[in-house]
Amino acid sequence: EPEVTQTPSHQVTQMGQEVILRCVPISNHLYFYWYRQILGQKVEFLVSFYNNEISEKSEIFDDQFSVERPDGSNFTLKIRSTKLEDSAMYFCASNVILSAPQHFGDGTRLSIL
Amino acid sequence: GIQVEQSPPDLILQEGANSTLRCNFSDSVNNLQWFHQNPWGQLINLFYIPSGTKQNGRLSATTVATERYSLLYISSSQTTDSGVYFCAVDSSGNTGKLIFGQGTTLQVKP
Image 1 (cartoon, rainbow over the protein chains, first blue to last red):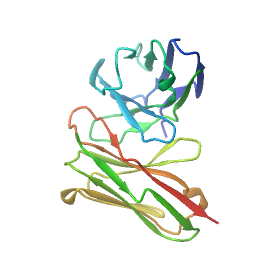
Image 2 (cartoon, each protein chain N blue to C red):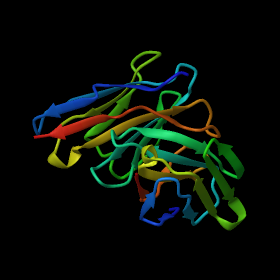
Image 3 (cartoon, helix red, strand yellow):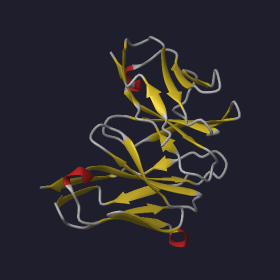
């Protein structure tokens, strides 16, 4: 069964550094998402992306965050200047149409030192 | 925005027991999914169930959209069922944004 793939599985970065989290959604999917989960808390929506545009973003998704689909397969989340509070698990998800289940990757655990 | 509440927050079962997890939501939804988060942090899709009833092995789910709740049934629980169960809903209609509940933490003891 096709899967959403995320790399790396764990990223350790110094505060203030830029980090790029990578995702390969399922190949025929058109809608893409990033979510994050701070340790011990619920999963929170960050951003949705369709047709090379952001369709919705949350209050968390401020100017330090950006998303990109640089080619036909990758979907990336960039954090320009990381803060301690950015430490979390980041999940990428995709679905083929809006009225279909979202498939989640295994996540990237981001640790900011 | 839509509110999603799950109950109970924590549940401890003996292996072999049955359980029911509940998800209440405050507005109409286009999408409702149940996930199991295993001890490694992976979110495993259990059900896509904006309405109706589905079954998959020992698990089943029912969503009554008109009354704004969904139930997840686990029968003959096993230690591998341990983890956190999340309900997530989309009421946006046009962006796919999922709002997650706080989760139910299930521990199944041998």
